[in-house]
Image 1 (tube, rainbow, N blue to C red):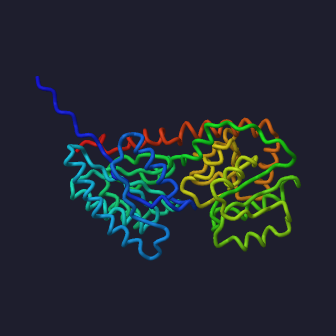
Image 2 (cartoon, helix red, strand yellow):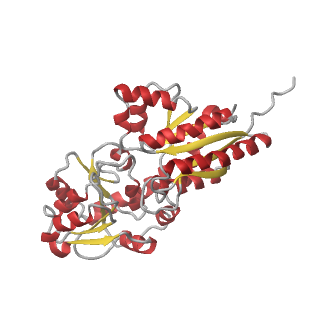
Length: 363
């Protein structure tokens, strides 16, 4: 009996945000997705479809992406392999833009995957928006999200296939830090850090308010910039030198700040994943956050950090005071570092990408 020929090998063309802006968003994660697909032996090419600096010209970049995408599909097919277009989207407009490209990819003979990165995802899963989302995503052979919560919300929409969980991968600098255990910091007072864009919903206002309820020796460094910077500085004025605004920090300053801190604090009600928590975990920092949305999947309460049920500054301050205990900080920080490597390393995410390939990548 003649054995059946082996199915063509799946080969990915990644589409998404240009990974050149270090200030958060899908662009930061995209660098890790590119590395994960490459290390897994799946990557053919990356084609940018969005650039945060291209104000007002986002559709133009997506239109320009169609030609190299089609060329890549043809090259993969000519090599006897199965092309899979794997695109990443955030906002509603981004989903429309990326699924338009997926329709072109399907016509050119590719299988398709889309990964959704949006904290607003659960708002798309009811009523008319759910019907529109189901129709738009029908073009994708595989739909991926970053968390189990998002998977459960999206499954309710009634897509034709299972929704897959592919978490955001660690940046290479964070993974390297996680593989270099640090000694506990010696010194008086609890040093707390938050790193994020200073926009509504990120909870930096709550972090500042929490300091008023924490031990007077506790200090906070706010690293980041954004439209809320001036208002936050005014809100912290009465706290004097207990709060320092560092602005946006470069790579060396970021690493130094994380090494010199004891706790990462971010009471966000905005994020779809929470990359800042796992980056801080790589430096052995336990996190304090709200029990909100996807955050409990990233910060294990009592395991890698402490979660607070309500956006209450007094409760956040009490959580910070609990972490004045060096032994507790060490235990949570060590577990956070191990958890980050186990679940979010480039290798772990590469395996998750392979597991999410539509029908194993076969045509």
